[in-house]
Image 1 (cartoon, rainbow, N blue to C red):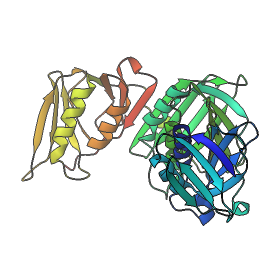
Image 2 (cartoon, rainbow, N blue to C red):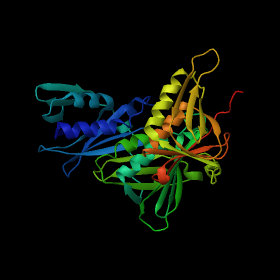
Image 3 (cartoon, rainbow, N blue to C red):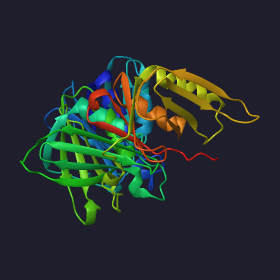
Image 4 (cartoon, rainbow, N blue to C red):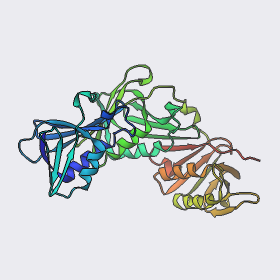
Length: 377
């Protein structure tokens, strides 16, 4: 193969495609990145491990470009990132190895057998579009609540519910629940679908949405609950990702969303978060911080007995009977960081029932439901 490309655009595309490379490839060839020159003056860079694929295009600058090659994706990414800001020339030598030159730097890479590399899945038909920044923000807000226990694979996913004009993202690890709703533009009015996408893959995809105005979403469902189906994302600059959907039964999360409340607290999010961080310094691992709400304000406490203790008072506007509740401090901080508002609102039913954390005035359609920790006493 042979081509020339600008270093910055090549490095950015290689780094993006390398994100989909598996940490522990099932076969050596899956650690490869496929480079392919096309007749329209474009170079495509692709990776695929049977679960997730990524494809990026780079405009070429030199004449006589042609060919394909499969090389180590991580090594290529490290090399291109280190190059000076000069044109990059790639060629194959008489031994079939890939040579890469930039300025006075020259590298030689071994190639992998292309005939053993799997074909990338096709991008599913477009189902609709959504603003790139909006989608990336929503994914970040709910991904914090996704489970990390691979023995419960359904909980490691983000549930995506598509309805006419509205997308709902849901994630839960059984201790907290995050829900975000936002508008989208379906290709066909009345489109409805529900899929379960690996949270880790979706989070990685969201990082690639920057610089794009809109993201096209494609769905190809097969089997029970979308098992073995795929979902695809394509940005307006031509970068494309597909991932295989998860199967399994997802919890009926709607029953965990309280609809009536007996008390609410409204307080500045940043000072509240800083107070939680300070008080939690004395909390032993997996022990809660205690929050005492009253019309006089909020008192936070941690530690007990002969151990180190801490307490701090924070101003808040509280409506309801005095209430004491215990929360995991990190889970509480995760929610405060995700609400996207300067003012946090916590709504309660009882000290032992889930509390709902939102931004003021409902924020942006985001709800973070947090289970209290029962007091040892």
